[in-house]
Amino acid sequence: MSDALGTLLDLLDLERIDDDVFRGRSPESAAPRAFGGQVAAQALVAAARTVGEGKLPHSLHAYFVRAGDPGQSILYLVERVRDGRSFATRRVVARQHGKTIFMTSVSFAADGPGPDHSLPLDVPLGDPEALHGAHPRWMDEIPSTGYQIWDPFEIRMDPPAEGDGATGRSRMWLRAAGALPEDPALHLAILTYASDLTLLSATALSHGHLPGPNSGVALVSLDHAVWFHRTFRADSWLLFDQGSPTTAGGRGLAHARIFTPAGELAASVTQEGLLRTPDHSA
View 1 (tube, rainbow, N blue to C red):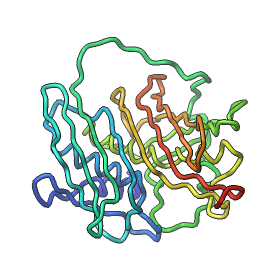
View 2 (view 1 turned 30 degrees about the vertical axis):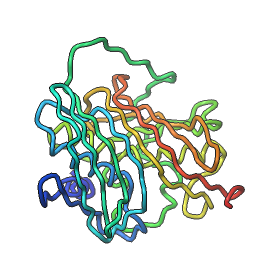
View 3 (view 1 turned 120 degrees about the vertical axis):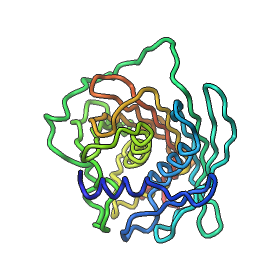
């Protein structure tokens, strides 16, 4: 296991300080704000720790309200909205400095019998082991601030396909950089963390802008939704097929389908964010 993955597991091991109240922290780095994927993943962990065995998260719907302070701990307050035989619902509010920075609703479900189908990827699935390790180009332009948010993962990029540029579409293989515990809720939390790494960049890429520290592009997450369709392991390869269906009103919408190497749809993610580009910076 890499040191960075160990750090991520420590970040997701929240401190319980009262009934349904948990405390999380950010890693030591010079980052100006807490990473949104980290806050969402920690909130998912907090919610899961109030739900009994037999139910796992199947959806998360979140809003980023204020930038998180990476130098201060974060309080996660869990409200037990409903506990049923097959479903449970939790609302989580993350607070710093006496103010809400993030809020989410998480729905849990017990698996049951029913029809099963999954639309296949419309391009060849490919083999991540045949690709060289690489990040999206703009990631390598970001100055080192100690712990980097993508360090806990191995990342490999699929070659672009015809027509990808117009929609900001890209395909990224990702897996945790080491073996993970068997806890299935932890794998969901790690995917939630990873789902915020590159998704919003699709909104800028669809207009020919490469995100990066000197690009003049501003991207700020506003809301985030994840649906977990099937069980998976976050320490096995997962393919993020991501793109942007629309941008308007200074906001961009991005969507990702996350596949297992067998071609099964494991999760879906949708995110909206503030988008400012050099030619529309007002």
